[in-house]
Length: 98
Image (cartoon, rainbow, N blue to C red; front, side, top):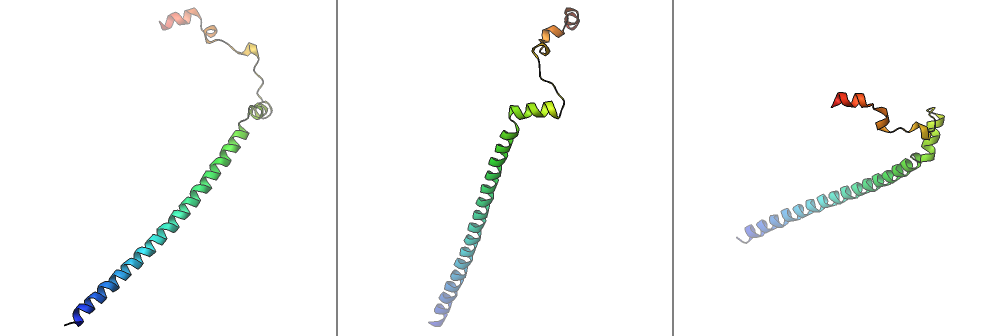
């Protein structure tokens, strides 16, 4: 009669050990996944910083002016080129809309 309870406890302890071992392996896998995600996040943050620096460099007013003049064939805006919107409309066209 003493054998049956001791065999029972042996299997309970064996199953508990296997269960704890599996939990430990799952935790290790989750920690590895967390580390890889953190590395990916850091790489992405570095890329974002690099893109922001490139954008700041490319959007400098002097550079945009040179691109507009040389590549797009645009000319500088003169003071006579700036019009007031009210100068474009006549009183006759304003009366048509009222």
